[in-house]
Image 1 (cartoon, rainbow, N blue to C red):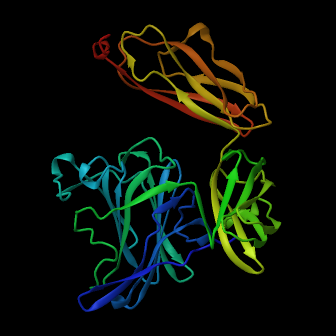
Image 2 (image 1 turned 90 degrees about the vertical axis):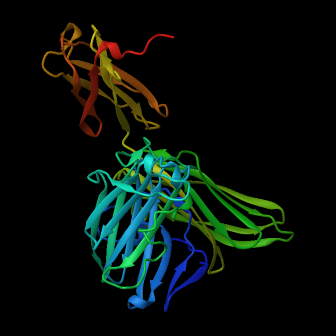
Length: 435
């Protein structure tokens, strides 16, 4: 299923003796997990804006943006090699607040720089200076696909470049992408990264988009937005006619957006007349393949009158392994502790399966599991997000300080999963005083 694209508002920016055309950016960023490999696949991305750099030889440029809980994704494709700059106000509280103001630059499709504004450099008007930060955790791939240059970025939520644990639906961020044709004397499209004033656009992270012509509304709902491979997607489609006359809708086609169509069944729902001030509601159930990969995918619905498409909706959902495993440990551990608990939290996301297995502890030298226990069995019932903490009591050695790493081997229906649990041992004197 191809994405339904509304008519775009195109604006023209004329600078000196040349012109650049830029469409209005789509500031609602849809949750979706693209593959970052430098090979552009239009089915994996949602467009941010499109532009044409006429003085550089009419370079055709398309920018894209998506997100999931772990990353903010950015891609640029162009008919000529380009440099790109991304500005991110990750906290959404204003560029000059300096609480997560970042500038990322990729030159010539290869060289990546990441910079952060320091609080001491902020004025009311502008970020006066940027300091380099570690860019190793930022994924950056480039390549050429069907004669077009491509740069793809994945900016992690929890790194030195971001103070949050995850990106969340409904959150607002400041975000923008600028593009410059490499080697051209033409200016940057959208903004000049040398200008450190607030060049961001207020963008909202969303899991749903819809658009339909006329006095109609379209709602595509899911009973659950988290499933495991092989489970069904259940929900309903609601078409509401808010006009004062009957509207005839031929059908609604439901299916996977982009490469999801190989993992879910697509089918057509016949609609017919919808009377004035009335709604058409139909439940749907579509199977998913057990081969579907973990990540965020998008289910799509398209509305037709005859052969003419008049509307569409896109709804994000997440595919996760049947078992989610999270580390459990002290944060921090104080040096006078005689005994601690350390282990894993096991969550069952399946509606029908009962995962069971065992957790085996691998303790660092000198740390003794109490009673010599090395393995604990678990079994988590199939109630959505039903979880079980599997914890070992451990006696720490004397005189240990600094970072400590335990490794747990967890047997799951998908195989053995190794889960590190990392924490710090700090002096007992650092324990907060009791109030």
